[in-house]
Image (cartoon, rainbow, N blue to C red):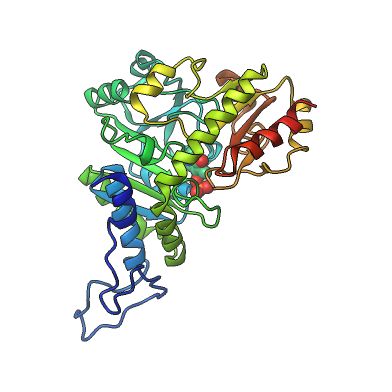
Length: 376
Ligand SMILES: *Cc1c(COP(=O)(O)O)cnc(C)c1O
């Protein structure tokens, strides 16, 4: 099946009881049993919920994995993945990640005995050199957030395989519509479904997709045992959002390309993988089918960024990304405030950098808004 057909149908059948075309929101905490031990596969809603199960099947199909396991947030999904590791194991992190991922390792996992270090994953040889005998996992985002550095997924996954290291890719920025890390050799994909997959800025959720049976079993166990499960209403919203994922991503991509070209044409330093000026433009073309909706722009200073950010009329000043409405943020003081200043400087996340999540509005309106905010 094609991507859009799967997005609309995979994992969901019309309701067997009524024929309702749309899968119901099974808003229940428990299920009646005919007799002790005699039930329909559903006992208690932390453990199983049909709306959640449909979303899990759907996302597994889209990412090309065998197992999808949903959580109450992207962070809960990432937490379950790193919980797979044991005392003394070492995690290698890409050096430019969502700030909350860094904080999870630094402030939650490290105090519990997990070692981690960061590496620039732009150069596969640097990744190979940074892998220690005790390294069990490499966790990355590509393009990275917010400096849009790409990792060569095929090259890095081959290195990880040879060294028996799990490669986990946070695919939130690209979505399975543009990039399929599992196909390129990654062990698992993680998403904040809060972002593009749901796409309407009205829920928070996460998912882990993998074909690795041991990882799937452990993450599924943690979903129930630690209990960070999403509610059925949020699963239903995500299912509804995913139905239009292809349409939305095409529009995000087209709008972002126009916005990036416009800003670059006006003399700004713009970071977007779809631009020929992006240092890894060729890699972007070979491993992604589009460049997504995220555009970073470098302004002279923090003061200039703050000034520009106060002038937008359509772009809303907010954390998050991936909704149909355009957002803008200042990563150094918002999404990445939990990353130490020297670590931000090392990857080029300057205080003047602003990050646009280009939405699905009419691009002429977006460009006019950028023009009045930035060039007056
Ligand atoms: C938002 C985000 C997360 C965290 O997800 P939540 O749903 O907010 O918990 C992780 N990774 C990336 C790339 C994100 O953008």
